[in-house]
Length: 100
Image (cartoon, rainbow, N blue to C red; front, side, top):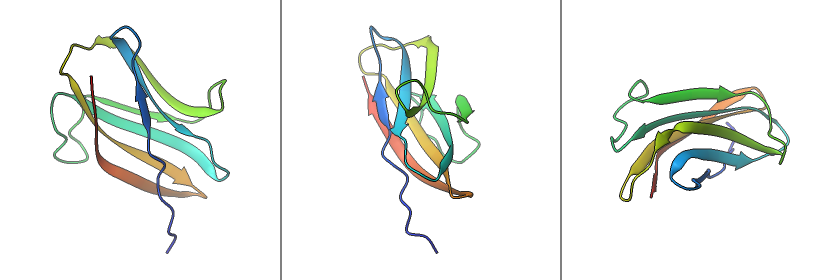
């Protein structure tokens, strides 16, 4: 069994309109998936507001999920989990959160 660890995601927001969740690229990554919810803990794998598979790196060489729709307020928390497909196998990083 592989000891692969899903990279810790960076969550950013500029001017409270939308947010991005991204990881650095590593050799062997072929997919990055983000699953998240605003102000509501994720109880199981089907319990999310947003879910997206990212199949390519952005111009900065990062795997990035971008949401431009949500307006964040002070005290908001994004609860999320991520998946990375590494060398053909899926690995998860569960129970993550980012506050604003």
